[in-house]
Length: 468
Image (cartoon, rainbow, N blue to C red; front, side, top):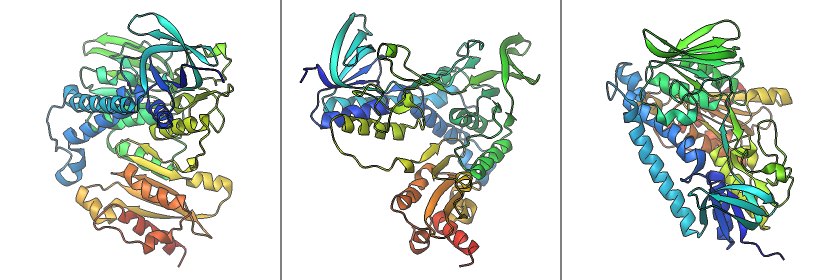
């Protein structure tokens, strides 16, 4: 057997790379993680998941959003909220998470290398050190690519990081705008649109699609759109941007957005969020003819192997579903397969958490998917306002929706919008994992008062629709 410097070399230190490295280390393998940036954690910790969710929580606190139904829309914790107020909490959480990641890797004896990696051959990677110490080649029996993605940009857009920016620039903004236009209504675009609208910023959303987030149940999305409209968000759906032009007039520096339809939108800032592209440009993947799609995302099989068997790819760099939670699991599974460890998991049951305001979470199939598949079903719903806990926390918009098989009553999907949705969904996920029926919720006892009671109310609603 050939002797290598490492049993496993992981390129990228985001959630997928971390979990892959730690799994291999626990199997007593020699592992190294290569990160081209001077800090660990990838997009997830530094510019993506953790900062955006922490920013959201800071907005909810300072704006008094959760108390508006009780104390009125004018209630705020702080009158003049600044970016500094919001970023103080964000910076604290980022530093804490970075320390945790570094400590986890160190205590599992994973070697950390600050370098940019590129392939020489299937078992050799060239490392160009970020501190200017030159480069060296290292070898590994197995290699896992977990480089994530970067925001997709257009050469036609005049990005300056201030007036026209991408989500990665969010933490560098020096002030809150009065008006903001979000180009692209994907998950990231909708999250930031709702966050800024909760602060009183006048937000406009532009998207060439007429149906937002098609993987989410239509009723849940309709509820989100209704809520955003209540927050004075303007939707320009079915519209496409032709050009973006920075302007300076008597009102200061602003941005004029020209739409193909001929419409024009003048806004203080524009967030460009039309998707993400695989961060594979510097890997020299052409050397090995690794297969990618049109967005630079690596193609893998069900075991997360690329077309070169000892090279795996996990996380956002392989595309859908591009969630930190699934990326971690992919990293673990890839490492296990590389070293012949059998695993058992149920990937079809992963939940989505969309941290808009209000938040959305879903697991299983939606009505549109079941209709297309010809599967008979019934639904049961519970409004938060029906539940004592919903009244206590002041959430009048929340909705929990169960979908179950018409004949067998097996639970097929759980779809939630409202406070705590991303936590609440796991109850339904567990029941689905064991093939449970909607009657489980009727026969179960939930703490009172809790939002979990929504499950019981929704189950009764669904069974009553059947005339039982």
